[in-house]
Length: 521
Image 1 (tube, rainbow, N blue to C red):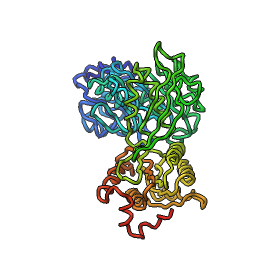
Image 2: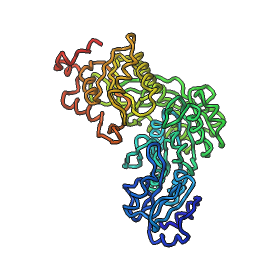
Image 3: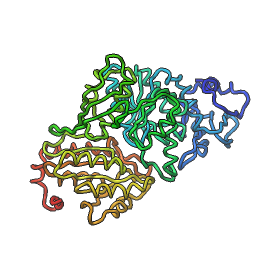
Image 4: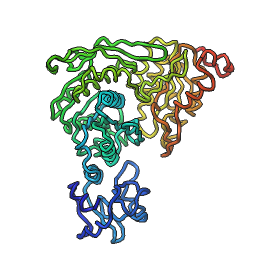
């Protein structure tokens, strides 16, 4: 694409450093980049200010790599053959430029945006799985990655930069995908990543204190205000009516909306939620109710639902998914079987590795999600709950006390380890978590190296136990000092079972007493 064409199609506001832009039309742009390491002579470089670095400081490196077209917020010290396009906010310009660069792919897709503190990933994946099975090919963009068909691509953030979003939209549309269920984070809304997207359906799941730190949101109100923005950007909304903040989200809607949840007056409601267990599978079943005002002629008011995902919160996620699927024109008869078979990587994911012990991977990393998970598992009456967890570095430090308190109250044994320490000292993080345990809480141990912590949990497990590995979920890395270090909890656990067998009882008989020092817990 030529630069003049891009500027016309995007309609951004800019001031050019040269009058004759046609000189730079000799370059056929193949990409927009904001990482100077990816700059080349056929790219345009956007100087994006960030929490720790400023893209303006890397413009000279991009120039040295051959780039000659720059979008910036202030004049750059570059040679005269560089075209500088000054715009008030490069982050705000990027979505419009990206949408134009990829040929406005959002017009070819039905886009569902899901926001809230918890439940975004599970809800998005339930929607996509059931819609695809019912004949509406649907992709996802979120914490697990960009997924469509047989393709899975990693994402750095739950909601990627706008360029990555629109590139994914183009790839999905070209692959025959017709809908996208995407997570919309509070930071994405604040930092312009989803500007210009007209969501066909906006979804609110729940709201609690999270992402409050010097580099995220300074306080809860600003966090909430960020979430509310989505509901001025959609054509229809689905709102969790039983959340304490639901009224704020209903008021923020500039479009029609329906409600869902457990409340009696919800348009889409779950009742009679019951846990079930079969071999190593944990799940729930419930009755789905539709309010008379939204029923079509001849449409049944109730439908029996079953999930392979345990927990009341997953019934809530499933009702939300069912409400969205109905809005997409898909009947319960089509989508219920798909929902019953759906699993979500790293979200209460039961690994079928042992016959006499249940192993669960989950992304629980804050007080709300950890409490829900532990209470859910307790309902299945396990012999013991062994919980392996840590806390991220650099931000959200209030989680550390909360995680210690909730595990201390609800687990039988806690193994404190690392999560993604970032630029913080891992030993300092685990020590801080451990400092919040008191004598009346469950026993705990600190094993900073996460692989060692995982193996320790497996080595002390007993028949009837539930082992919870929390915080990493689907992730296959640890984030350490800006680097992604390969780390797959699932692979470690699977390899352990492959080497030692599927019987925890048999494994225990071979473990030295020095290793089994906590078996009395």
